[in-house]
Image (cartoon, rainbow, N blue to C red; front, side, top):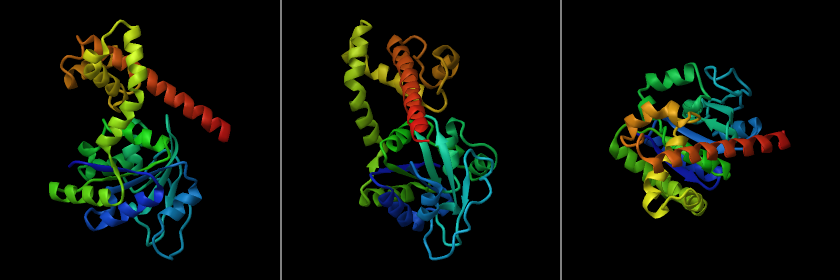
Length: 265
C-alpha cells in the first residue's frame, strides 16, 4: 500500500486537507505533522467539535513523548503525540500512525509500530522520503501523509492536496537539492571530482545517507545493504563521496536543532 504525502505552508492548510480526505481514507490512515507545537496547541488542533477534550492521556503505545487523548469528535485517529525528533525539534504528530511515520528512524516503539504492521502499512512507510518531511518541518511547514487503499483513491488524495495548495514530495525534493547544489558542487571540485558528470551518483549517495534504513551508519557498516539497493554503491566513488557528505549534513542538522532546543528550552 503506497503512501501519498503533501507539504503545506501552514498548519491550517494541512489540517484542512487532512479533513477533506477523510471521505477517501479512514482517519487511522491519515497523519498530520506540524512543527514547534505545544501540547495545548496540539490538543486544540485536533478538536473538530465542541466536545470537551479529555486532556493529556496515556502514552501512545510506548512512543517517545507525551500523547494526547482526544475528544469524541477528534480527527486523525483520535490521538496526537508530541515528539522531539532529532534534526527537527518538537513535532506534533496527529493520528495513530503519526509517531510510527516519524519513528522510522527509531522514535517509536511498541504498539504504535505494531498497529502499522497489523494494518499492512509498514511496507508503505516512506523510508526514503523521511528526510524531506524533516526538511519541511524544519522550515515551519506541515506535512500530511495518507495511506489510500488503491491507486484511484491515491489519485483523488493527490488532487485534494493540490486543491489545498500542497507542494508534492518530488517538488520539495528538487527544491531541497537546488538549495544545496552550489555548495556540493564546490565541495566536489575541491575533491578533484567533475560535478557535472558525478552529480547523479553523488546525489544518490547523499540521499542514501539520509534514508531511514541507513541513517547514522558509516559507509562500511551500511555497505552490504547499500549494495542490495544500489548495485554499484560499492564501486562508485561519487556515490561514496555523496554518502559521506550526507552523513555530515545530517549531523549538522541535528547539531543545529540541539542548539536551538537548548536556547529555547
